[in-house]
Amino acid sequence: MVHALHEAWRVLKPNGLLIDLRPATVHRRVGILRAGEVQWLGVMRERFDDDRAANRAVAEVVRQGLFKRQGWKHFEFHRTLDSVAEFGAWLDEFRSLGKLPPHDWLLRRLEGALDTQRGRAKILISAPLDLRVLQKRPRL
Amino acid sequence: MTLRMDPEQNEVRALKAVAEWRGQRVLEIGCGDGRLTRRLARLGAEVRAIDTDAELIRTARREFPRRLAARVRFHVGRAGRLEYPKESFDRAVFSWVL
Image (tube, each protein chain N blue to C red):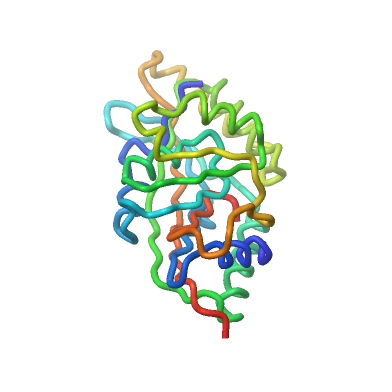
């Protein structure tokens, strides 16, 4: 990761900006959305090892004097899905990255909740994002 | 899959709040299927978007809106070995890849 940040430093113009956009290190909440109301059903248990490594890499290039921190934003980011099958496929993709233990309990809760909604509800995933802004500094 | 992402447009609001994008040369690293690339292009950026996954790059090229296409080029590429000259971009966006 530090090498990738060095490469970004190389291709940026003087005072150029590096934008680091990625999910915040908070567990995603999952629920169902119906008529603008959300019923939260569970909190996922992702692993954050990669995210913490990325934070360390950013801290390293700041320490090296290549970038200075210029700003940060934390904001809500929602996804909606129509069915438990789609949510299961999304989970499988997530699990393939090695960041997620089994969440069968959550699938069962969603199935139970959606059974009572007669297809009018959507599945809502709440996953806040962090956006960090770093400004390129000249190499000392 | 009927996945809908960020219906409130919070992401683009945050991007607009932190930097000017119009006319800026932007390198997007980890563009995937071009979801964020579309948003950057709509903000007026000139984008070079890379991803390691050739299939995703094909999808991004195929599905990118024609009216924005002149502002964007997609390439297969790696963050650790960028095939661009030094000091060639105003912005570098790591898109969910760090």
